Length: 242
Picture 1 (cartoon, rainbow, N blue to C red):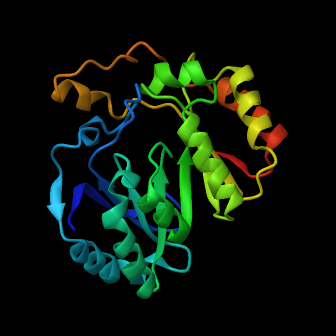
Picture 2 (picture 1 turned 180 degrees about the vertical axis):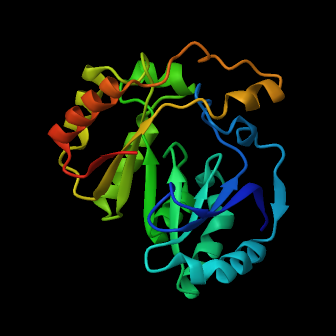
């Protein structure tokens, strides 16, 4: 079974521990207003790729991964191609390569369950804890994402919790505290990443003939980031500001 690949990044340092080969897959059910990769959203497009090509690429780069690095599947939403990913993850493991899945947790089926059962680490993006705000931000409810987090916790699967701090959209104290209260007892959360809002993908919208709806949203101030970090620190001992 082929994978629809959008692009690759070698020696990535922001998508999991260590140096990583990041494979961006095509297609995502979410429609996040701040998506940095809007060209990966559509399930049409991408390059049909034999997983063996990715395996070969990863094995060739393995000497650079060191003890912590490996391969991260991102997107788009990689779990949407879970059926094709499962045998590839197993093959990567057979070659001693660590695997991370960068996911919004919004897709679930038996293939996703198997994928999350065998991957070494999930990078779980929680876009908003408030249900109504989540729908406005992504187009879909957050119930599946929260259920995915609960499944990871119940099944002893380690994950990083990631939260993008968008001014006026996801930086309200009440929303951060609600998220903290919900997740503070989770033992499988190994790291909480507070990700500042950026507009690096804004230019892509114009090239795609799309309007970037957050064009008037300012970047985070140092004060906003510091305040958010203090809030997260009240609930998590592993919170970091990226």
